[in-house]
Amino acid sequence: MKRILVTAAALACALAAPAQARSLLDYVGQCVPFARQASGIQIYGDAWTWWDQATERYDRGERPRVGSVIAFARQARLPLGHVAVVSRIVESRVLMLTHANWSRFDGERGHAEQDVTVFDVSKNNDWSEVKVWFRDSNGLGGTVYKVHGFIYAPGRPHENLTSDSPDYVGALIDAYVPGAGAGSRAIR
Image 1 (cartoon, rainbow, N blue to C red):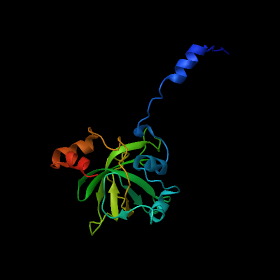
Image 2 (tube, helix red, strand yellow):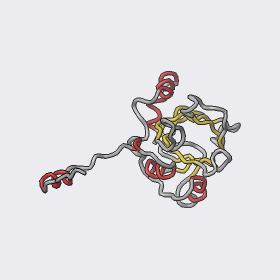
Image 3 (spheres, rainbow, N blue to C red):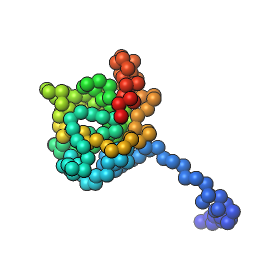
Image 4 (tube, one colour):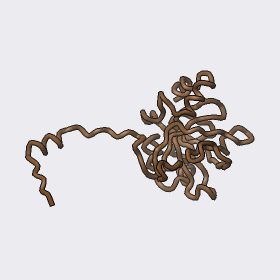
């Protein structure tokens, strides 16, 4: 076994060096701590409990806002629910989320994804039912997810919530939906 000698000067330099800020997108883990960090909403517990916990603590509604948390209901495919943060509003029935623990990356769950497409498929255009882009299948898929609504964050969303250079789906939306990219940043 090799011994590593560290001089006092080397140790002092290492301790004095500023810690490198990790990007929001370096996160690997569950959706709840990610949504809390990205939105600033301080709710704890399983994702399916967020909607009720937000009562009288945060404003809630059925219209998305950049930085708000979309609260998915508990259901067969989401036994613990899911929470994600709205990163871009494209048009009345299309938005993008930044979230964690949805698709697989190299066979592993838990990774953060930025600007993931979500489509409102509810009959009343009230965001109560959605389809979400699933990287594993490269599409929205057939699953319809029930949504409680949106929990509105009190402050500004995390700086890495959306990107000036979205993935290929976002780039297509920006190209074909007039003002989609610019308008999403203006709605805060």
